[in-house]
Length: 348
Image 1 (spheres, rainbow, N blue to C red):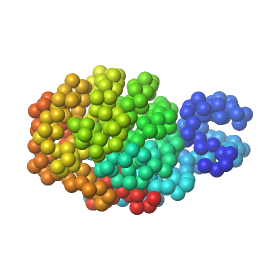
Image 2 (cartoon, rainbow, N blue to C red; image 1 turned 90 degrees about the vertical axis):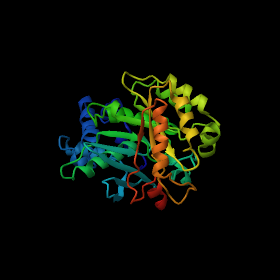
Image 3 (cartoon, helix red, strand yellow; image 1 turned 135 degrees about the vertical axis):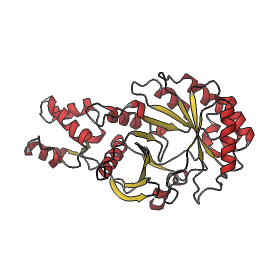
Image 4 (cartoon, helix red, strand yellow; image 1 turned 120 degrees about the horizontal axis):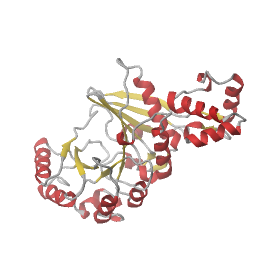
C-alpha cells in the first residue's frame, strides 16, 4: 500500500462513513463510497460518477482501491477456473471458481502460504509469507465477479468458501472483517448461509467464531480418525487433538438446519482403511454434520497416492453405514494446477 494512502476496501461501513466526514463530506458520501467500492467493485475513483471531480481528486491523494492484479487464469475442461493474483509486494495467491449446475462457488485465500504444515497440501510447502488484509480477501471476490461478468450468459457467484491458500482462523481479525464487508446489504450482500470458513482445527479460533454476530458455515479439515495418523499428516493435531477439536465443534452454535462439514482427504494406505471409516463413524455419530470425502489431488511435493475408485466407494459405504451423510467430492481441475497452492508455488 502506498505510504499515507488508505485502501478503502479494508474499511467497514462505519469506518467508510467516518473517512468521508474526515474529508469534510456529509455522512451520505460515506454510503456512496461504500456502494461504489463494495457494491459496484470499481477499480478507479473516476468511475464514481456521482462524486465531484474535486472529491475524486482528493480521494486519489488520500486513498486507493485495492492492489490485486489478475496475473493468470487457467481453465479446466470441466469448467473450473483457477486465478492467480499478484499482490502489492509481488506475492502470488490463488482463487478458484467451481461451477456445479446452477451454482458457482468461489474458493478464496486468506494468507500468502500457510504456517501449519499439512503434509498433503501444496500450500504448506511455501511456508507463511504473510497474512492477507481484509481488502485483499474481498478483492478476490470483486475481480472474480468482473471476470465472470463477461461470460455468456454472465455468471454469478452463489457460494463462497475460505478454503484456498492459508488457514483462515490463523488470520482471524482480517477474515472476520472481510465477512462483515462481504455480507453488508449495501455491498456484495452475500448471505452468511452461503459462506463457509474452513479450518484445520484451531480450537481457540473456532470458539471465537462461534461468538461472532456474523457467523458463517463451519468446515473442518479432519482427514484422519485416529490421533496418531492425524498428527503425522497434520501437525496441528499435536496441539489440538481430536478430543479438544470435537469438544469445540460440539459447542459451536448451529442454527436450525445448519451442519458442520468435515472434509476428509483420502490418502491411499494412510487414512482410507475400513477401520478408519468405522472409527470416523464413532467419532462423529452424535454431531449435526456431514462428511465430504475428497480423493487426494496429486502434486509432486507430497509422497502420497490417490486411492483407487473401488477403495473410495468402499470407504464411503462404510461411513454411510455408520449413519453419517457422506458425499464424494470429485477432484476438479485435474488438467490444470489443481492442488491448492500449486499455481502460486510456481510463482512464489
